[in-house]
Amino acid sequence: TKLWKPSAQPKESDVSIQEAANLLREQQVVAFPTETVYGLGADATNESAVKRIFEAKGRPSDNPLIVHVASIREVEDLVTHIPQVARKLMERFWPGPLTLILESNGTASKNVTAGLKTVAIRMPDHALALALLKAAELPLAAPSANRSGRPSPTKAEHVRQDLEGRIAGILDGGPTGVGVESTVLDCTSEIPAILRPGGITKEDLEEVLPEVKIDPALTGKDTPPVSPGMKYTHYAPESPLWLIKGEDEFFRNQLHELQEEGYRIGVIASNELAEKLHHDFVLPCGSRENLTEVANRLYEVLREYKKSDIDLILCESFPNYGVGAAVMNRLTKASVKIIEQP
Ligand code: TXA
Ligand code: MG
Image (cartoon, rainbow, N blue to C red):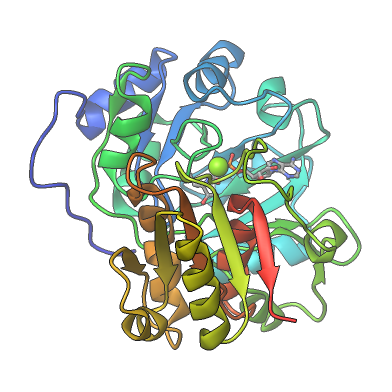
């Protein structure tokens, strides 16, 4: 568990751990930091409290939520049983960015599980989150604390931008660490399956598990709609994002061609490519050699470009291994077009 530091300037929406815990016990929703992204929490056993999460986010209620706990003991209260393999994973990776799908015993509210027979559970690796869970003495359902469709929040400021006035309070813990959401692993199938790549990588899991599957929905050609005008719904920046797959020279040519057509272009690129481009609007998001840094910066740079300044965002692709798999999963969903070098 790492150290945390609140933002320098306290804000009106700020609450203390005890205030947040009290609000949660009164069925209110409160945003809190985790090691991945900020979550929007509510009592996971209370249907009307959980309903407030969906209302604040504008999230469709057929999408189930993750339940956060502070101990393995609390998991036993939520599931029919804990399979051996899940217990092994908890011991190895909790607290940490790994969410396990287990068989629900019905304690989690129906709108947490979206009516499924399973429930998603994780123990966050963040001192404030754990302190809040202990103070509230409740399992907390918490999706990312952003308006539905927007990039997930990695700072309290991002939560304010999206949800100020719509939620009871924000527990400010400064910037989060991992920067992308937890890995979601289905432990109800014979061979555990990754449903969402995240902070704990496939390679990490393979150190403990003899075999790990990747959900076919993830490996299938996940091609986004082709027109930048089309509606996109995930992690979306203000301006349409095109993902470029190819060498640096290919990227540079795409950039120049589009500029000549009159587009105002913002670039998101590795430090290495950013340096070569000599372009006015470039946000470097870390070194190619350091995908952990890229994951940490990703959502912040996606939030940074404003549509008043930029018509189009061109974004570099990153290697698809380690935490790069999570980065590419989010970028693919955030993009409206993928341009591959022939
Ligand atoms: O890092 C994280 O996981 C963050 C922080 C706040 O903990 N939370 C988060 O929650 O990302 P959310 O609601 O944005 O993502 C929940 C994911 C979704 O992909 C959802 O489909 C999946 O978990 N999920 C939840 N319950 C499930 C279930 N019973 N079966 C399959 N997938 C489930
Ligand atoms: Mg989310």
